[in-house]
Amino acid sequence: MTNALLVLGSANADLVVEVGRRPGGGETVLGGDTVVLPGGKGANTAVAAARVGASVALIGAVGGDGYGSLLRESLESSGVDTALVKTSARPTGIAYITVTPDGENSIVVSPGANADVSLSDVDALSFDGASVLTCSLEVPLETVIHAIGAASRAGVRTVLNLSPVAELPTETLKQLTVLIVNEHEAAQLASDWRDLLKLGPTSAIVTLGARGAAVVARAGIVEVPAIEVDEVVDTTGAGDAFAGALSARLAEGDNIVQAAEYAVKVAALSVTKAGAQPSYPTAAEVG
Image (cartoon, rainbow, N blue to C red; front, side, top):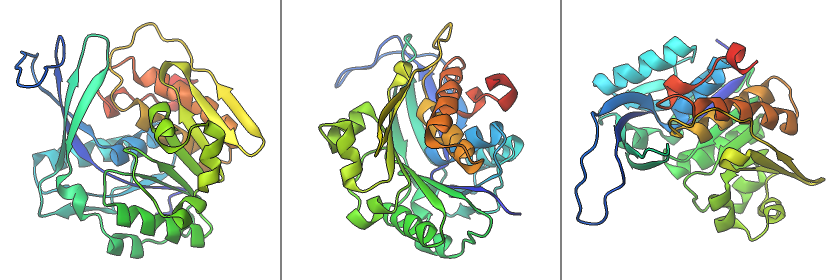
């Protein structure tokens, strides 16, 4: 099967608990019932892209446990090709997520099987028919670097969601078509958004939460406002929804501003429902 979009990244089970407030050091607070949902930055990105119509495959790893089965079922039911998701001897990655009444979240990730996504998995890839490779950083950094280099040499456009921020070789940054960061991550990398391009990527996008996003290109900065939503329920996975929708539209031939305009709609709609993957809208819902 040929997929126009390849996503390299993590697949986690999200263990979500609602709390009135986050605990301080040495403090215990009571929360609601734990909800188990499919997540992980890579899997989320792939599902978000598939939901809006992209032909997408995930390159990743899960454990041979119940959480791994949950993730495979979510990916496949959303239309993601899982042929490149391997089963590891390690347990499936888990994200421990607390959500406060304002919809904001705090997350601790245990990588598990994600640590087994390797250089050999990249070497086994065929880029025939692919137009975009999108990566995130909850898998080994050397694997991401290797994949970006391989895709660039194959003439495939490369997108990197640099979250969490990590130090990348200059050559890797120069091979990026699009660098995605949120405004906090952007501040860690450069004092001015325009300076993100001095790091090497052809273009950059700074996501701004409820304010939308800013597209940083050689010609200047274009701000893309978010759409208004009635209620914010849960922001978990909104950044991944943006990355997936953006990548889907780039794979369809949109320019970066058009893709960003679509992606901010998808991200905004995703925060109106609980969870990450279950909250992602279809193309019909985006309109």
